[in-house]
Image (tube, rainbow, N blue to C red; front, side, top):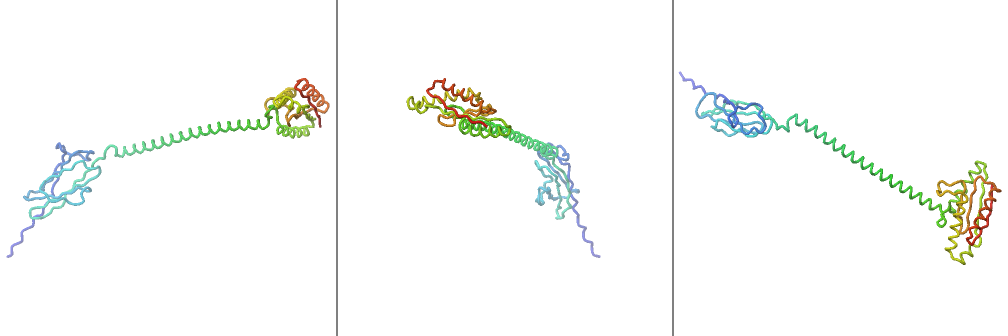
Amino acid sequence: ETAAPPQRFVQPPPRIHPVVTADNTPVTAPLPHAFGRMRIEFAPASYRPGTLYQYGLAPSDSDWSAWTSEPFIDYTNLEHGDYTFHVRARGASGETSAETQWQFSVRPPWYRTTTALIVWGMLTALLIAAIVWLRTKSLHRQADRLRALVDERTEELRQANSHLERLALLDELTGIANRRYFQRALVEDWRNAHAQRQPLALLLLDLDHFKRLNDELGHPAGDAALVHVGRYLSREIRRSGDMAMRSNDLVARIGGEEFAVLLTATDELQAVRVAEKLRAGIEELQLGVTTSCGVAAI
């Protein structure tokens, strides 16, 4: 009879012994972040001389390690995540065992935990909201300052325009209304007189001997006479100093030595009496000039 071939030995998978840290403390899963050093020990299920080991750590290792007789492996400060440790054994005759697995995880650092990420997200949202609020508040303040500046400049411009308009309507020498203002007032008073069926009178005053005064005493004396006459006429017809708030009556210088007076609600007879009073009053000023007055009324 032929003898039966000897039965081939099947290498059993290795066993993983308690996993310990550097100070021989058993590892509890999951491992804390920055745990230091961790040692994984392994041994064959049945003792046979010449046993070698091959291992790998997924997902850190892409392939098996080289065969070694050392029955342990150390890992230090693994990144946080889930891991699977694989180990298998090979006997002296070359037979390879099935692999043994051990799964474990490493906690993330506190600042990368789910709670921390939520807190970071909330803080980031609050920071963005604070930045937006501060930026918006700053823009509002800037807009308020610009509006105030625009309002201030607008008011200054309005006052300047008002002043320019006032200057444009005043006679530069005497300070009373000029020809331009007189013509504007004449049109307005004429229209109002017709609409309200009220009388309107116009006095034209021309200073007599004015040229002789200029020739004999000089232009400064003539200018002084015009100023005195203008002030006198203004005082007599109750002119207000503000052109925008004038009374119903108006006195204006409309030429070199010519003045005009508008008398609202005044008929011809009353206007003649006013003209005579003004004529006599200018003569009493003793300025070296007298005046001739023309009167018209509607």
